[in-house]
Image (tube, rainbow, N blue to C red; front, side, top):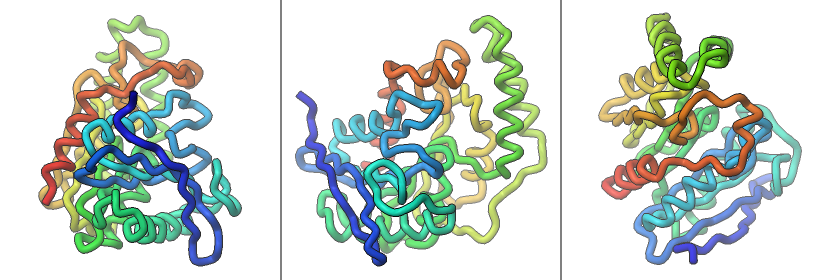
Length: 273
């Protein structure tokens, strides 16, 4: 028997568009988290055209097992949300509005929730955190955050895949480390005009072949008091990986987010004032 309840919820925005989501509630929650939806067509569970194992749903369930409630939702035109798919700026405005509405409506989220984003969703979480500030939020967790231009990140992903795909698993991580190190020597592209004034936890797997670990290091380095966790043996989705997986292999449903990574995130959240 799972240690939480899950409820389908709907949140109506000011223009009448209804966003769908799932509220996960453990017994006697000690904190609340609102997940930032991925940009594009990714669903609330973290599934997309090249992901099939619901990493965000797994993280939500893991947090619930540690008495942390959460809300996951989808943007306009995705999943059970109404309206038509919108661009990044409109998606940001929607997410900020959702956070304010949900924090006031669902007491289980604690009034001042923590925002959590993964990969591209980190952009929504980080900018929303800079807008809302410490009066509205307790903190923000960014898993594998990107900060450089998309062209740089796609170049890294292609180089990493090319370096590992033809090698046996025993040699892949050494090849990946070389590509990561070379990327880290490049000019840093840091976002301008964004000040995160809430506690920040940046988490990344050591074996991330999608976004280089230099990204989380650079971001954490410019936010006062930020904590960065580089987790050995884990990949972009915080799965303990034996080797590189192709996008097709990443669609399998039996990959598991590492419970120790979820525990580290839960511990950080629980310790927030």
